[in-house]
Length: 238
Image (cartoon, rainbow, N blue to C red; front, side, top):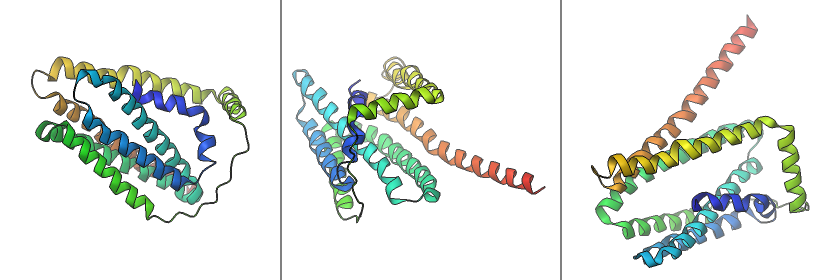
């Protein structure tokens, strides 16, 4: 619940904050927050530290959710419309590939080296990402949003009222998330896999299977769109 609560809390005002600050500086700050929230997880060792675990998860996921939103809003600012679609597809494939590798390896790392080593390695990745982003040259003019947050929220609801298909997609996504994936992972690991292999390995295998689908999906979809476009062009020519 805490993984997704952060995004819900941020949704009303994240856009206004993103438009008011330099994307690069904001993303660097968010990486630092993720680093400290992740490395602090090594201090959790007993059940009495559960409250700290919840706080760190909320803090970590808040920064991660904000970073993702900032990153996606950055692409239209540095790319033209003809390249933006390709960039979004590449972003999806890279994200899915990284997710697959990370979630697959993490199960083995936790099983062989322990939880704390996994957290340290995860924190090291944030240092590496910080250095990459810090040395990346991004020249973007920040146009601070003058629109009030409440007015922006009102515009959002007006848009949803005029675009019922958007509400339809939101409900489908929510229903799948509620019934198909996260709930099934917990049930399957507890009932079918915990008695056969380590829980960490079971979680790693299930998440990596999902991630493989996320990699293949965009590639197949892009290929299908290309074939359909070629078919339409040939049909028009005839």
